Length: 409
Image (tube, rainbow, N blue to C red):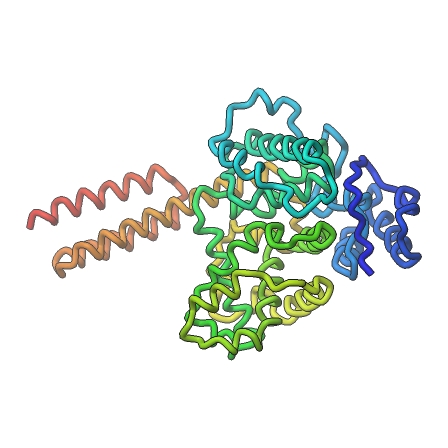
């Protein structure tokens, strides 16, 4: 029985009395009581994580309104919640607001059900306001298509007043990699997937080796909110994802792939386009409880630090994959901004090196190549050793000057 309630009734706090009249079983009501006890003034995070991960998750939206902010690492307190900005209307317009408007117009396709066009239009205005507030308050963030799918779930669970604080924490501390100015950090997530598959099923991993893991991007970047059509299911999955670090979303996708083993082996390995097409669409229906249970087991057997191909060591130390490991709920929005800036600087350094390497390949004469190899090596060392963008720019300009000189001979 699915105990998830879909009433969409906003509330500042929850008590057991609030949900007693919602038709829950005795077992569900007992679980709600345990969840609310874990959400007291000094929350029991370990208990809350366990309850959010167990069957039926946090059970009811009234409970989620209390638990989700705690799982995101802050205490919800109305307008004083971290990330709330009452004056956001006066802030400069964000560069991505035109795309936000287009995506919001396509929102609320599957849920809530049985609402009038007028009610849905009102929800779309609220959704636009929540997204715009977060982007204007944190203008460094880059909007991505699918972000509105995530935010509409938070809006329905938390309400228009409380959603911005949670979405701000989610954006800066949980899905920051997806909101950088480049997709490279998002694609780095996908490179963990073959390692997870290899650890559990080497034969299946080999069968898929000619298929790049880009098939997982659409689902993972929006936390599955675009693909799962039942509100109760996506709210329950968010219970689980918010209870754990960002890397668990990739383990969840790996479990979905593993569950399709027989289907995938029926497709020849030398037909990567067909495999990509199959894997880029989630199977329906999803047995969420079984998938979540299998995800936790897979993660326990193969923690990211133990994955083959040294995959974990290739992940940036500033990536949410690593910064949401351990006791990460003490991070603040300021910490998220600082990590964002470090990631941007790292991406810029990597782009400079790639440009230098591309230039090196262009000038192939041995007499030129020796000097270039030495210079690129020194540049790489300096970029790793010194975190100065001005130094990186200066070094690269010197390299281009060197190339112009060598080009005359």
